[in-house]
Structures are given as C-alpha cells and as structure tokens.
Amino acid sequence: MNYVLALLLPPLSILLAGRPIVAIVTFLIWIPAIIFSGGLTHPMFIVLAWILIYQSHADRRERRY
Image (cartoon, rainbow, N blue to C red; front, side, top):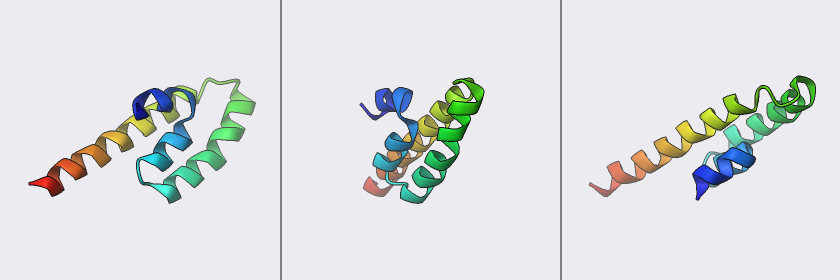
C-alpha cells in the first residue's frame, strides 16, 4: 500500500516508512521541484521513496531473525 502512496505523495510515504527527517527535507525540495519543473522531477522522488520503503522492510526482516 505504501508503494502506491509513493506514486502520488512521496514525502508522505517516506514519513510512513519511519524516516521523518528525510520526509521533511524531501517535502521541502519536492514542492518547488514540482512547481518549477512542471512535474519532470516527480519520478526521482518516487524512486527515492521506493528505495526507502524497501530498506525499512528489509530492516524489519533482519530484526526478526
């Protein structure tokens, strides 16, 4: 579910992945990037969110064992 949210609102999905500082920094960069580039930089933030979500799931799996 978080991966789908990353398609629309990458900073929120990063926040839900447990990275609040990175989410705030991403949000502060994401808004001007969307406005000035017309959405061309949005895929970069989607990829960042997916990587961070994947890492948080990998960390949970590692802690389990």
